[in-house]
Image 1 (cartoon, protein in one colour):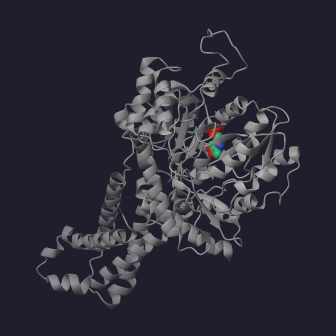
Image 2 (image 1 turned 180 degrees about the horizontal axis):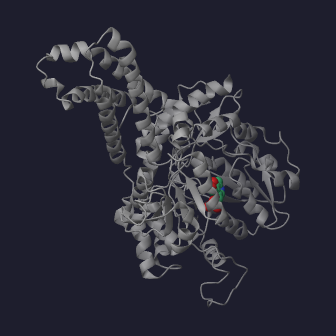
Image 3 (image 1 turned 90 degrees about the vertical axis):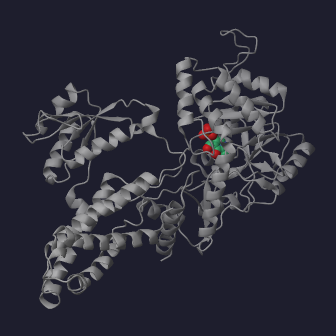
Length: 636
Ligand SMILES: Cc1ncc(COP(=O)(O)O)c(C=O)c1O
């Protein structure tokens, strides 16, 4: 784990090392006229003190300590080199104008140059080491997977920047970009090769090279070129037209504009994919059996066991899973389904698909789930079901809900899309009610890419689900016989095989997410305007963190916080705009602000922070610091 302080101490030590090595390289240490004491302590002492202060201060100002070097790009290393250069210039000015005339008559001028060069190399080196060592346990060694990249890239500029980009593309095949050719104006380079890649030219021939070399994308990597030259190349790309990206220019880099935009971009969420999932997908591809095969069967078997359910049926996504629940419950026009307004839109849309009416019931502000105490008042003779959502992975309070459902003969459906593995009073959610759905979009606890699974203990519902997802075919129907109106909601073998591997890792994934959430809880508890978000209520015997949300104090402008965080490179999301306030719900049903005050208050004040299984302490600290600064700004 790399902490701020370690980095500062390392930087100070490296600066000292550079200062010691500088004169050694000039062999001045052996100069008989200079004793070691005189040389180092008298002549260079003040320079050294200044250097060890200047370097860390500049690194702090340019945000170098804030970066998580795991994500370091070429641009970050350029920032580092630029900062060292600025430090050297300051040191030069200080020695030339202050020290030499007044303090150090024998100051070796070449020292600051040597010190600058050695600092750059040492500091760059240590950060490369950090980058390499900061691999997440789940990181994929992309080279080992043998993936072949297919989008061909033309790099304009065969200088250092271009060569670095080519190297990064080769080392990161997951980007899908293959450096196919360079383009340069330098006649000495044209016709030669670098990194095994041909250099074409001059740049004016861009269109021809793009056509002849079957180029898909262009990267303009001539940061030292005049702005007009870069603009000309951009125009050429627009005229062809081809996708292009431009490396930042040196001037914008020195101005500091690029330093902000190149600083750490934390992902909002990230699936934890290992080489095992990739190899499983490759094996399925090799089997040529891409749909309705053994992987889907295995995935369903594993999920049923995970959810303590008799049956599991894999489908394309959570929305289609919920749709099938509504159909299986025989809900149609004019029927009413009670549900929560504080959820992802699908949990109400699935009711509209069958032309029934969602009847919203406000939430409990502590658990953020539907408030059972308010349900009974919403029941009419048209009510057919209660669709419960286990929001953010915390189970809703099921016992009182079942009591009400039993009294009024209502079906209970569980939207457990965000809650795989969660437990209510020791029972796994999903099939506590008549049926439930788990979803596996990539931001979820585990993923299949797209996908979901229905779970139920009811044999009839399971058979119906299997028929409905498969174009209405019954078990004994032939391929072109369709017993009922059905859908193509089948999960592919590729998705299922990812699910099989992920599911085997589920308890490990949930544990890690829990650890990340706990770290967030601890660090955020010191922020006055942040309420520790989701209270884990006593009925939740196992939380399954899907996202990590915080609630801001009423006086804070939540949307401003989101904007300011985004400007600092940190994404956040306003979870959730209550469903009844979505434009088409307002239009269709006449909902208005004030209808469900608790859900609206939550919707106004909650934001989701970056959160994923392998989030590191440093990343959590980055989010915390940014949030702290932003809250001060948003308040002021
Ligand atoms: C509570 C809830 N229900 C339903 C869904 C829909 O799942 P999908 O995106 O797989 O259709 C989601 C997805 O995020 C969800 O969070």
